[in-house]
Every structure is written in C-alpha cells, then in structure tokens.
Length: 458
Image (cartoon, rainbow, N blue to C red):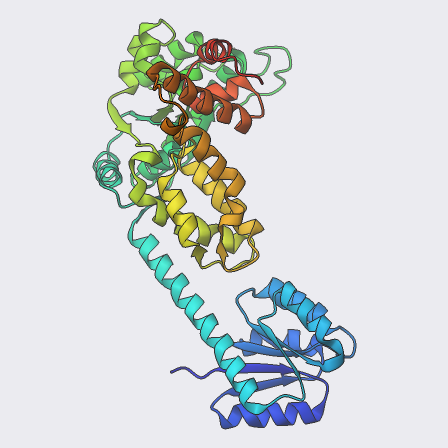
C-alpha cells in the first residue's frame, strides 16, 4: 500500500502539532503550512492525497484557497476545519467543492475516519477513471471509438485501404464521424507526415471554391493582387478531404474530375498546369447515386469517387458502442473543464441506450459536454437530461399511444412520427429549414413540402 500524504494548512501551532502527531502515528506523511498562500505553494511539491484547510487564516481565507485548489486539482479532496461559530462557512465550503468539514475541537477518531474516507473515495475515483480509460483505449482506432461488429469491419477496411492511393467515398448520416474516418485513412497511410486538408464547400460560391481549390495568379480577377496557392497544391503528397461533396456545383465538378484523372489542375488566370500527388477522400450524407439520377451530380465523377466505398452506420445501429463513447467523451470534457466525473447514473445510461440518436455521435458528444459542464456532483444525473432527451424520446420514439384511441391508423402514425422528427430538427436548427433538412438527410424542398402537408408551425 502506498504511503498516504496529507497537507495541513492552519495558523495555530497547537493544531499543527496535534494533527501532525496524530497522522504520523497512523502511517501518514504530513506536510504543514501556516497560511493559505504557503499551502497553495506546496501543492505541486508535496502532491498530497488530502488537504486539511482551516477557514479562518491570515491573508487569503480558507474559502478563497479552496476555490483555487478546486481549480488547480478538482480531484484532490479538501476537509475544512472550523470553530463552532463558523459552521455556516463550512457548509458554504462544501457547496464550493470541499469533501467535508471538521469542527474544533475534534476527536482523533473522527479526524482519522473522515480522512480515510476522503482518500479512499479519491483512490476509487482514480481506479474507475483508469479502468474507463483502459477500456476506451482498447476499443479505440485512431480517434474512432467502438467495439461493435460494424465498427470493427470499418477498422479492418481502413487498415486494408490506407496504403493505397485509391479515392475513397465515405457515406453516412450527419454526425457519424466521416471526417474521423478520413483522418484515420490518412494517418495509417504513407502520407501521414504530409498535409491532411479539409474542404467544406457548403454555402460557398463556385467562383470562391474554385479559387480555394486551385489557387490563382496575380491579376486573375479583380482583387487578385498576389499569386495564391490552392488547397490541392497545399495538400501535395498528402490527402484532401471533401466534406459533403454533394454540395459542389457542376462547373467545379468537371474541374475536380480532371484533377482525379490527370493529377493536374490549372490555377485561375494561369496557362501553366500544376501537377500534384494527392489522395482524394470524399464524404456525403445524401445518396449521391440518386443525385446522379436526378441530374444534380456528374455520373463520371461519382464513379471516380466511388472506387472504395465506406458506409458508416448511424449510432442507433450500434448501440453497444454508446457506453464506450460516453466514457470517451466524459474523459475528454472532464479534462477540458477541470472536473472529475466518474460516469452517468444508471437511469441516464438506460435512457441513452434506448434513445434513437438522430444526431448520431455528434449529438451524444454534445450531450456529454453539456452534462460535464452543468454537473454539480460526480456523475451526470437525470436532472440534466429531463428536458433534452426525455422530451425528444417521447415525441420521436412514441409517435402515438394505442391506449389513447381504439382506432389505429398507420397513415396517422407515420404522419405523427414525421411531425415529431421534423419538429425536433427545426428546434435544433432554430427554425432554419436548410440546416434542418441537412440534419434529416432530405432536400430542403422536400422538407418544405412536408412542413406544409403536416401543418407544422415554425
């Protein structure tokens, strides 16, 4: 068993003597400080397992010091010491993050029991965190997390195709992690030491996109005061990732086809072609083949892109990965926010496993980030999901209740289900229909028709 270390911060010598002697006799290593400033200065060097901190100190108060300790090391338990007259301050300290408080004069047995309880809880948290991290790492592939059969198949496919220069088309709903797959392909290839360039063509005019992709020479157009490298040139010897390639317009599609076929392009305003060695990886959340049939995407470009196809499953089809993803995001956002959360409650996990996850992994990540920020305890409880997910579950997973009507209409059930999905998508996108359509994976015109048909108020 490792030696336990305690830091006692109190300006009374008699308290220091009594506590120092008590803890040393019981196998603890004791460090001592006579002021809050001195105690804070000794945190790094001593790395204690527990701090005993007096509330009434000269200079910086114990409550101020507690706030700084929680900020520096939220996992470090702090027991506040107080006289009877300042018990209210001790209760306030617990709200600020103290483990507990002792009132002076205290009994030796009480001090030892409370210290033992605080350190054991700290050690248990550390063990849980280490175990959770180990389990997550075991089922992690680059930045992708999952152990489901579908994800394991994708990992194997990435390993197999990464060494080649073949073009890859990644299909999947919004929020499934298409860019993470693209990065994994790049990182597993011989191009990993060269650039990975992301192109997002949404809401960008064809002229600006063409300039971004292929660059331009000085004087190519009004405002072109200097030569500019395009993203293809920046990505030379590396990979270029087209996020939502379906949004690229026809004139740029034809020039992109030439780059794939000839491995060269013509900067705007230039007569000299540039050759590049770039692997193209594209992603889409819509059916490109359907766009081809509708005449909205070049057929020859589609087949050039679709040399190797990866289809990412939505989260609802790999529910066994939810606990792993929860652990992964808990670790990530706890670290970012300086907090230590051991997990989510059993009730919350049961709800997360039943939830449909229309926004996929991205929605789960947002939920965990929000929960970590708002959680006041060691775990995310039902109080943080009642409005966000329980409401959605009721409107989306329970479009109708048989007990409410003796007649069951299939058409009405379908309309209710669609109405729930669309209403929720519009709520998430704050009424912006174009974004809601993207979230639902349908065309804006289709969404508009359904809003009118279902008489949905925005």
